[in-house]
Amino acid sequence: MDQIDLQILRILKENSRIKYVDIAKAVGLTEGAVRRRIKQLKENGIIKKFTVETSIELEGLVLIETDVAKTKEVVERVKKIGNKVFEVSGEYDIAVFVWAYTVEELNSKIDEIRRLPGVLNTKTLIKLKD
Image (tube, rainbow, N blue to C red; front, side, top):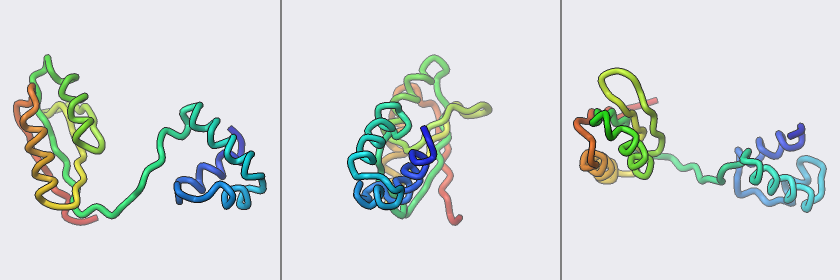
């Protein structure tokens, strides 16, 4: 990976929908060269996925206490519900960031987590402001 690849990554992080021709102009390459570099960055695992960033109305942190024998299984299932999942130390075993556009959507995701086999207890913290 060289400086041009780093420039391309910065541009894509700002706008993942930008056209290859616009990236090419910005970095001084042809469109084809940019296309090949992005393909290589994807194949090498540097670019994992292209995403859309939106303003989220609600953010919650769900702390989960699990049956110790089922923690790994719960982590894998929670990854399908939450946006970021961490195993943690202390009173709880897992911390999950959950993003939602409505209170109903947030409650639905929390209820889905609570119903998972191996979940013993949860505690939810809702972000009020930055």
